[in-house]
Amino acid sequence: MKNNSSATESAEISGSPNEEAARLRELFGGSCDLTLKNMSVRTHQGERSVLVASMEGLCDKELMTVSVINRIAEYVPTQHESDVYTQLFRSMITCCDVKTVTTLGEAARLIMSGFALVFVSGSRKAAAVGVQGYAFRGIDEPQTEVLQRGSREGFTEPIKLNQALIRRRLKTGALVFEPMQVGMTDVCLCYLRDTAPQQLVELARQRLQSAGLEAVYTAGCLVEYLEDGGSSLFNGVGVTERPDTACAKLCEGKIAVICDGTPSVLIVPHLMTENFSTLDDYSDRPYFATMTRWLKYAAFLISVTLPGLYVALASYSPEFFPSQLLTRVTTSISKTPFSAFSEVLLFTFIYEIMREAGLRLPKTLGHAVSIIGGLVIGDTAVSSGFIGAPTLMIVALTVICSYVIPDLYAPIAALRFLFILFGGMWGIWGIVLMFCAMIADLCAKESFGVPFMLPVAPAEPSGFRDVLVRAPWRVLARRKFVAGGEA
Image 1 (cartoon, one colour):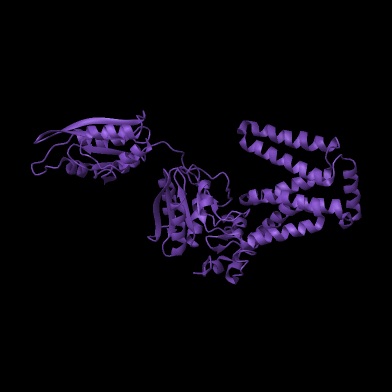
Image 2: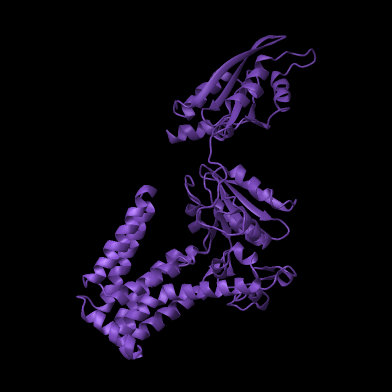
């Protein structure tokens, strides 16, 4: 059956509307949303049959009536025009996007993209008329990338609308949208022709073409195909819901991958330092943006290492605690039935369960999870002596810090558990060993052949003006730092 379908898709248009209708029904398996309308036009040689094929729900009915149906119904043959197809094509091209197709497979793909296909008796080609009009969610404010002083526009599901949001901001002929198809999904490669290195564009093109997916249900499905490989905890592909952020990355010589049906765009290559910067950094004063950036670096280290460090000190090296703090920690541990290692590991595990529950539950029930987590599990567990107050404070502080860098939450959560395990088994030496392994992982990782820790390792002095500090705009605008050097 699959071979028969493939043969039908590769078949050329026969010139018989009745035969094309039968082949389209076979290709779509008799699906009820395939609409086939038979019409006829009068010519000097007699009547000619016309078939209009479309997909219900993907076309604007009013536009289709005005641009296609009425044009066929009002057809009047001219004395010097013997080709009905050519005359209909010319009449439709005045009001719509019209293209010519010669194979049934291409015609079927355009039908599923919202085009109306017009087949004329005696013509071995068909006219694809752009009458798209399917319902979609309007442009709304991004939910995950919230800015204080930035645009309120976010990407939405239709790929054409997302392209327009980028084009409206980058008014240059160097902006290229390269259409592709991954399985059954439309994908677009976006880059600035004069800025993005051609070897990176070619590499992205090859990786997308080699993706063995039947369809792309979400942009995250393409991440593993765009990655350089390896088993790193960190993601070498950036994700954004903001058109302004995507445009900023394109101006840095990066490449954007837009997927139809997904309100987010992938950015490659992606560097570690980009997780600690937002567009708000470039709206604030340099000193405040620099202070905020240092807070984010501190929050990352606290969220990753603090629980494991607390377990290591409480279990193996309590002498490092100040005397007053040592008394409180030992008293708390002695009153609970678990060791410090078990307490931290258990409560961190409970928090991840509550987070997942709050994330998946309907919004109307989300407050119930917060109340249960804050009052019942938190306060009651401490007052009943099930968990110590220092443990609760450590885990709560760690969780708050992890939300400062939301793009890194997944690696932070995994590293947190690893640091707790290593600290509980080998103490301070386990923390040092795990920290060295994390640094080695970061320095060894590459994104599209670009070192993930650039410009820190290897050091690029020109890039430090936007890493540890945020230099003034007079310095940032002087020359642009791109992956591998300056432009």
